[in-house]
Length: 466
Image 1 (cartoon, rainbow, N blue to C red):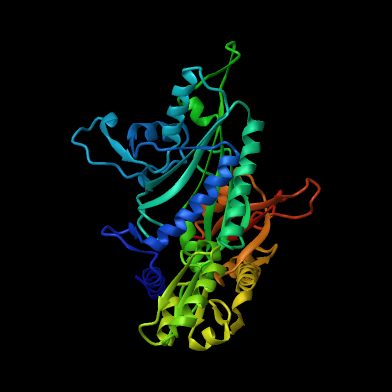
Image 2 (cartoon, rainbow, N blue to C red):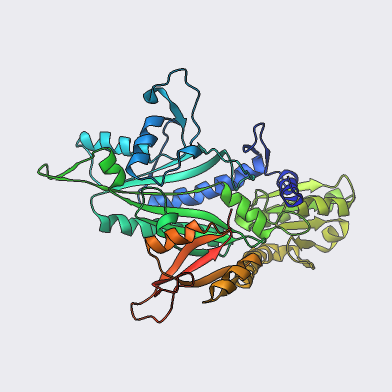
């Protein structure tokens, strides 16, 4: 483990978020880390409910033969990533795989429901579960052998309807990343060879980490009729016309927690977005308080904070040590209360991401904290936006692109999105990839592909990634 990874895992451990599991590539998700994941779940569940998405739970064990059949239909599926359970039988149908993703399970489920002819399309389902991958180079939250995620799967009568939902789901993810995680991101469409296996279209949202590497946060896939044809699904319209339905899948994982830690933390420790912090406010009481005056003071204080998640700590060590510990934990706001504050009906406030302390009247605390929350969230978004802007550069020259990426930049450049061109690019085995297409170019463009020199049809982001 290198020093940067050790520093990162120490941050997770001291911040009470996660620690490595007993098997390499697995992890213990601690209570404070689990709380962050629950906040993400709550946000997504609420947004998905508006689309009438329902939650389900499916098995972790899947017949390995299903993935072999899928791989034969499209050779982009990498079977080596799938973890298989030991079997004493050589028969392919006896081998069991641990769920790497659930397209096969959901497609079987859809087929059974459609055969009952008691349902109408679309059906939109979501699962919160763990999945398993045969990862070699692991990093906690970023690349794991087992991790937690949500996966949405839906089935539709038409491509038009499915793609409308695809955009709605992608918009929910964008809202999640910006409003809850406070992260600036690059979004767009994956190129042909970077799409999810079996997908005709993949939308992605990704962030740029402090080391210049790009981290994929969410993906949404239009699967067309690939899996429906694989399992021979037919949907009867008015009991007379048989159609092959089309599907979507989409997901995000506990990788989001890692992105928050890497994007916002500083030399002091964790920095957590306001809505993700288990304790948004900690009230620190130090010194001997006059009981008669302090009871009324603390009652008023608690009343002013009843809209927030807060705890009260009575100081047992030095104030400096306590503040350092709370900073390491990423507590957004600390309220310091001593006898002087009680006597003057005032409070002393220390915001995690600002140097100066704030002093205000106790009876104005509610309004002050409300403003602090707004300023805190805006500051995190502004910092993330500035960070993003400092890393993204543009060029039309290939040599300059390679040089810029070696310097840790993410490059936006003209690209010809065409299979032969991308196949040739992949064959060169560069240490970077095409992250996504930002936008399509009009047919009359005079831009040339940065790689091949042919006429470009889009602008794409290039960069190193996890």
